[in-house]
Amino acid sequence: MIQDPGDHSTPTACQTVNGFPAKVEAASSPPRPLYDVCLDIRRKVDSFLAQDPSTALLRNVQARVREAFGVVDEAFQRYEPQEISISYNGGKDCLVLLIIILACLAHRPPKQNKHEPSKPPSEPSASMRFPEKFQAVYIVSPHPFSEIDDFVISSSAEYQLDVTRYELGMKQGLAAYLADHPDIKAIFVGTRRTDPHGEKLTHFDPTDGGWPDFMRVHPVIDWHYAEIWAFIRHLEIPYCPLYDQGYTSLGGTKDTQPNPNLKKQGNNGGGFLPAYELVGDDEERLGRDR
Image 1 (cartoon, one colour):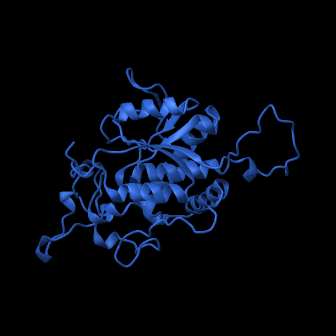
Image 2 (tube, one colour):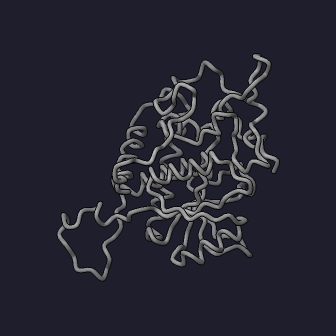
Image 3 (tube, one colour):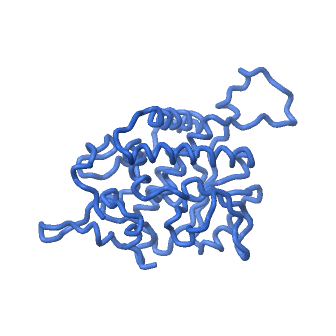
């Protein structure tokens, strides 16, 4: 199913005239501290939550965000920042997840080291105690799209992610990541209910037998496809440009094509509509071979 063109909002400020999202460029000046990044994102998300949306879709997204906040806050109660990471491959779901994590992190400065003497509240400031980067693992798909790699690099710089990249299978890559980062106890994952193997997942799930041992945290497990895109577009979050070429689920170049349900009609049938034109969860993976 494709959205009714009459339901479209005006193209957001993060889009250029050719329809591609604005590229997240690495700043020539020193990068902003992670704490400042988190505060800016929190203000943006809080502003959205304070609105009175005119559509049921956006009202549903507000409810999803509040629920996801609760899951992320619980994760930060269970684990210290050095014990938790995000699985980040530049896709739309983990991008939404990342924004929510950083928004929550803004309200949860790391605790003072228990071995340090107590200090006045203003010394040091919360930003000085904040980690420089948030940890992330990127398991690269076989035959990766260059656009995905480029977006992971640029967005990681913008959002201050410390990304460790592995060109291995998922199980082998995660095992290598935990071996290289032995403090990690939990990983945020952007899996949704309609993804393969996502049907029975909860917000917190230990890995299955035979897999590297850590807690999987799924704050966006119950989000629908249309809600993911409504959040991204309403908050004007830059995203991987492949989505504007009709790709709705990203894998590698050998197993991923533009979604056939987005193929343009007329004009000799050339080209595809952008991913956010699709609505149905069950159509999301029609461009994937597996």
